[in-house]
Image 1 (cartoon, rainbow, N blue to C red):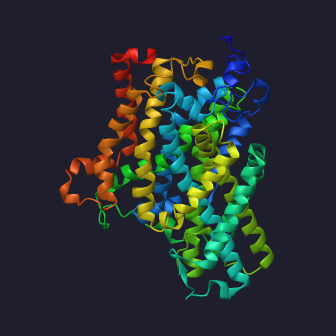
Image 2: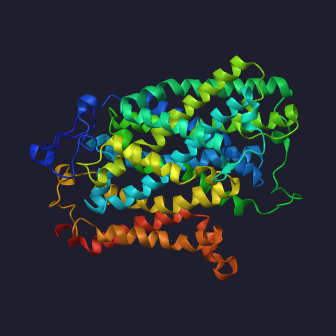
Image 3: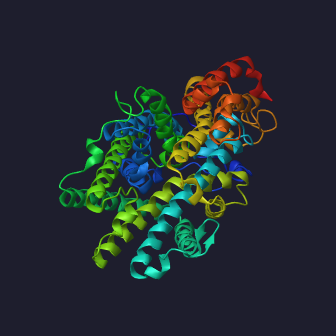
Length: 504
């Protein structure tokens, strides 16, 4: 394989041999993207992040921080800082995708082995299934609430519950789920088209909501004026840092998923410059802006309706003009659909395909994602705002942080950004390690996860807080940082001690 680079594409030759195409580790969805298909420029990546960041979970993200005691500026700053941090591993992991045209699970083979790569791929995939379910639940809830405006009996209290929700809610959830599955069936190009439509659409909807709130409330209301609960004389005086750290970790956890599988998108980049600038411009600012819209509109609802409404779907149902209501809800459902497919289907579809490349295609992997997303009962994951941060976001960041640490250590420190592309698709290559598994990578992964386990078990109330040393409970607040740091350092150390593993 030629090692020469192109100044335009910043990539070596990505052609694989005919022999590799017959390998059980190869299929067309996992194959390197040729240069002719690398068309994403700065604008494409900025639009990708604007599209994925401008979504209902982002709108509602600051609610959990403000509910915990922060004022609006502290909440927005925490969100911005968290995304500023996570964009660094995002850009680093994207490098291999852009240079070699490979997706996330194939990139994992370099560090974890041809079979061991399934471990981080499936860990990432199951988190994505949870997110897929959450976004699908949100879209289905929007449909349910708009139907309730026109058919009040549908949402009348007292309806029989099914798995904690009404039958009508479940039917709307499954209807929106089926739309997601149809888009998956149509393929990756339909996803890109959705994102290009959605980016300006949801930004416009958010700004219109902002203007409506400002005009009808005569300002942005009490939430923008209220002091932090951590200020002197307030109920939580002196406790800011004990809340800020897990809050920041949760904000990093929000996109810790994409910081791993970003090669699934960066493989289509025209150059490293395009993916770096596009991501740096698109992610932190959009997250902060859309979170601010959520805070400002929510504060206005306190004045307009006499109660605080964090859910934008519920805010929209207050509009009396049926045309405005239908158009707004359609835009919101389209936006949720685009974010869900791009952020929560592309990666797990590739990850499940990686289990058996000759048997599972991207479409089949997407269907598996959808089925698991339903079985995880997503309405329970978002029922409690506190659990949303401390259990869901921080909990899975403890799993994904170590994977990122190992991948970056292997690619940048040990391999110095050089991969043998054909070897990634061969069972008997340097990436075979020990029967397809890298013991060094798996030991590093487990060792980096274990320190956060006691704190997680206390958080989900499996263990009593008094039975676990306070050190481990506090450590859990830093879950992503702890996992990333331990895995990064331990992987390098063990790889140098056990350098002979590659030759097995």
